[in-house]
Image 1 (cartoon, rainbow, N blue to C red):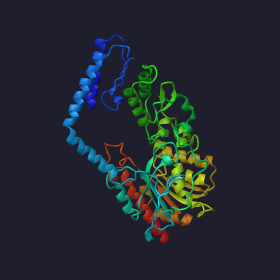
Image 2 (cartoon, rainbow, N blue to C red):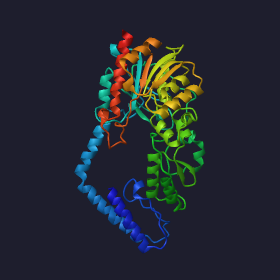
Image 3 (cartoon, helix red, strand yellow):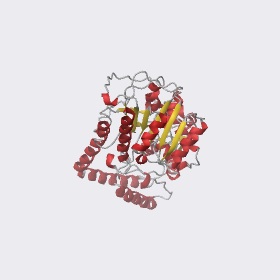
Length: 434
């Protein structure tokens, strides 16, 4: 299909040079969602031959699609098996969300899973076949709680959580964050076109759109007076959804700024600016983080349990999403052992810890979960008297649907570290039991 796009664009450009004198504006194949996305000057120029060429080329593509129907159905079945075998609910509200449907759910934990220590594990919801079944099996066969953060903020973030926390008497962080794009980003409302009906942003990733792409979108829209044709709208909306673009001027779609992403994910302003980070590092750090409001809703049940403070073993800490959630809930961080391999993330977390004037103990010199041996765990348990909460989300590099190159499940190079989470959890429970 990419080859067809390339050939198609070349032929159309050649036809354009032959049959019209005014230059055309074309979106290159690298930024196109599929075939036939060609954008030219307003329709007052004679383009009959161009459209005839387009129809012939689309007819050839339709023929090719029919010939590939069987193999296409097989591929589709494969992807469906991968993503839907986890039996994701249509409405991803877990065991309930604030001001939303409260499903009737009676949960009975096995005796071995009853805390303390409490544990809380997070990862992407849509994983290859069998991943969540394996995770659940290792974590006492506890049923995952699948939640989409669109019920907590203006952006989607579909995640699965396995934990042994109580599920009654939860409460949300206050104030409730804006739930619609234009409420969260009011300065964009003035420029939002009537044909862009988005109310929620898609899941925020570690990458952002290029200036080259946003410039092409601007040129494509400037070709038309009033609303652009449907084909142009479809192309622009595709890119806006894919890259979470918002409208910042007339015909001007732009990526989110780091401060806007921080707000959407529940972090304080400039949370990721500490530690000498650049924009790329900030986007990467935020793309791999917790959505604070969602996590805080689940952890809120701990507030009455630990009024004098909580001791946390934070694995794969990232930029401290769990700690930010506990702090915003008003739960004192008495002791925190943070394990994070990224120096950038460690610097961000340390900066937040200092800026918020935390009074507890922070140990953040363990950079790799594989270095956290039973001997080190025993020393930490003796030092702090044990842990009240073990929290973390192992890398999703080999699980996420956007990675088709090395989507190897829990056996992938990075996502295999889930088993370290299980090993450490099991060791802590045994040591504390003894």
